[in-house]
Length: 442
Ligand code: PHE
Image (cartoon, rainbow, N blue to C red):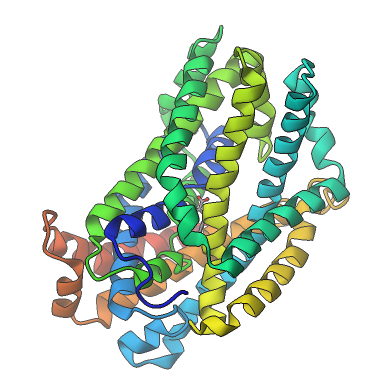
């Protein structure tokens, strides 16, 4: 099914790439990172990086995909006639492989919560939603492994059957529904007693909260939410029709991502201050805090259930892009191998995801580098492999591709900022990425 022109319309392409970008990064990871690295200060750094670094890089990845129109472990050779540069594609492939493994841990938590809430709903059980005890759930290795197994299986089935397009079409109404649901949660959160100190925490940047680590993680967060440096976006752009508008697509994805991240922050932090949770709770933050908010709503259990379905949907449209990248690289776009590659890659990802999940239970005693095994996997992807991949592509685009060809693919629509974009990619962004990359080793 997949060939080099999968999406006939520009909307199809935007839906798919927005689906890939908007997922756990904005909703789960953003509030958890902001809670650990200074609230408003983190949001400010994240906004600066997303607009000044993320947006130009996203435009760059779309341009490269549109120019190269092939899978990403070949595209660099095709564009530059230098085979060794395909290593940038392999770096991206490795990144999404590890990313999928720890992503599925959170996907698994969503599935477990979904079942718990469903059971409560159909048995008309009016017990408090807070009875769904997060610490209890993640301490159960078998349950969490089962949850993430189901998440990987769902992704695999969608990719194997090649029904991603159906899912992308569904995102036309699922995404707006998710936005509406988030807005409902935000309104409830804001009405809680003591909410204002949480609002101040996330919206007011306090300079003393800016730290080197916060800066590093804010950049990593921009990479993560926009799927940058993994070549995932290059792959999607390589499938798109020639008419796709690079800049309009990139700008709308960036805006949606910021919107969802801020909404997630406004949903969580007022509730943290109202209910006395700790912002530095870590990866479990969203799962611990949200039940208390739904608890306060009329029809809370039902709305929570709907929210979890939409949340799972957003996570799946991202995870299919993670698996899709592996499939396109290992099948070399030969669809007869699609099923086999999807199955083998999913089994390998599942094996790798087990130590990630166990970092919250039997292997929680293992601490090194960035923290637990899970933290290290995230760090390796968001702070090492993604920036390295993006750096490699900026250098290829800035120094090896012909400016006039680039300009032609960049397009000449209403946004005519080719020169500033090109200068950023060629001179500024590589230096910023290198400085921040090196800084994390000190
Ligand atoms: N951007 C996705 C998210 O925020 C994660 C992702 C990264 C997806 C890289 C594809 C490639 O959830």
